Structure formats: C-alpha cells, structure tokens
Image (tube, rainbow, N blue to C red; front, side):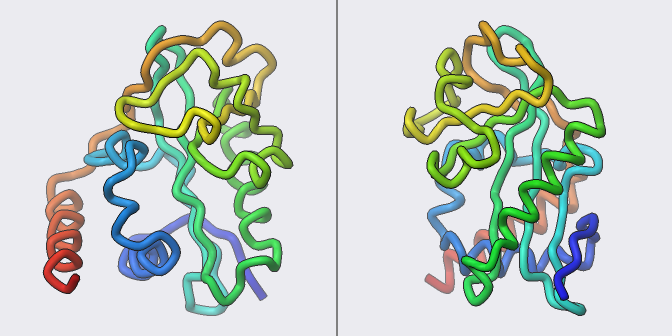
Length: 185
C-alpha cells in the first residue's frame, strides 16, 4: 500500500535517486531548478509517497513571486518510481499537494510540465500567460492554477524565488551530490 506523508530528512538520498531515474542529469539544467536552488520547499509542501520503507514518489512546492509581486507556488518536480508509473500515484501526489497548498492558504500554483497531464488538475497555459521564467522555458508548458479565484488574473513579470534559504550544509550536500554525478557520467 502506498502512503503519502511529509518528506523527512531520511528521504533525501532516495528522493535524489528517484529524480535521477525519472529525469536524469538534465534536470539540473532546467530554469525551474534555478528558482529552487538554495531554497527550502514551502513549509508543509514537500510530500513523499512510500511503500513500506521505500520512497516511490515525491512532489515539492516552492515559494515564488510574480514580477508584479504576487505570491505563488512553483510545483516540481513530481516524480513516481518508473515501475509504478501509470497506476495513478502521480495523480494522488498532485491532489494531496494541491489540497495541502489550499489548506495552508496559498492562492496560486505554477509549473512547467506536460499540459495534457496537468490540465486534469485545472492547470492552464492561459493562467500563466503574462508570466515568464528567469531563463529558457517552453511557453506551452508553463501552466498556472488558481486555488483562489482571480489569484493570477493580471499577474505579470518574471518569477523570482522568495522561499526560505536552505541551511549551508544542505546546499553543500546538494552540490557534492551534483559533483559526484558529473564525475560518474
């Protein structure tokens, strides 16, 4: 049975292995990663899906602001163990994350992802039309969801990270992990 719970420190290594399996090293080159670097996920919005002791899914949301200063969350990455993909666990993680974000009072969520997949959760390109990422991104994959009606109406400008900064040891550990992967490649 798959359980969705808050991510814990013991999940970090397994989460990184899962993200490597799902996205490979190219994940570090994405503009979304630039907004996450050096920051902690939004409080209460780092979720893990586990089967027994094994981490089989992850989703995290990050605090950002639009160029005009409106707060929002940036979702990602969402990943499910490749052996379990297609069984609905990604959808369960998404619904749990969005419900938690709404319960915590957040008004809008943005992401860069597969529009047909995320449309079923209410994400639409039109809601992010006035917004940009701080680097290269595919416009058709930049999607928004309003958890509160009108939260993204008229929002403009380039996203910027606004979340809590990660403690230096976590940044050092992440940097070491990236360097280790580069050496292995």
